Length: 321
Image 1 (cartoon, rainbow, N blue to C red):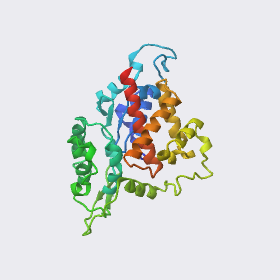
Image 2: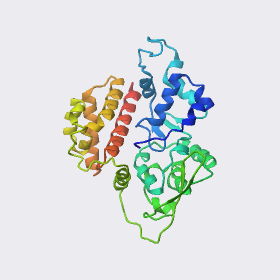
Image 3: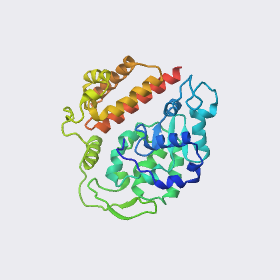
Image 4: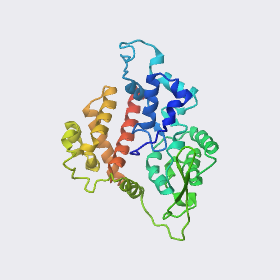
């Protein structure tokens, strides 16, 4: 997930947004900022997630402070409202914020490449073609590498191979250092890439992700040794025990991850599941990473992998109920 998300303050003057009630505004901001959303503003969001944001569960409505039974106070009605207002696309649990990339575009092709690991985990959907067409019209097809590197393959439902031949698709070499023109009308820089006569080197997705985060100064120099300012004791003790059994996820045994783990625990508890269920899923994820020889070199990369794994597991639980 991206550490920072851009929200244009003009949202407070948008006619659709100002017409929302406080709960609708809260849910909308959760779509814009929640860690389960990928850097391109797309995520697998079950209705139970929205009800959790609203403070609802199967037997309680936060707005009415009892079981009111009014469908307009629960998740599906909120999503229908955003669809009616033309703000999202929805395909089952897949939520796509239509204008997210208008305000949160990657700065250059190398940053876009670092996004692809999380985007490849998304389910295929015909809604991506609608998103591509909408953004092509809104952004006048620029920057071209955004469409060739991300939106066109998604529209063709090639989610699982986004990283393959990326530099060939965008027509650049890996050593490109884009220059930036003046900012657009929404205050976002418009990068223009320059080609160089160099041979592209082979670098994995994790190295690209680490390189991006090092620029932001958030990668731990020694991920297995948390610093004293963020002790692991601030994390739920059950989580600490689980992580000792999952060496591939040990980087998340860190005080900086307290909010992340609190969110995971809250999501699990929404389904009336406990620590035993979560422990089983984390062990399963660790085993999968060992089998696939996948590592977690950054906190954000590990958090994203855990988030998607748990979300898919919770979706399976919901489908069986």
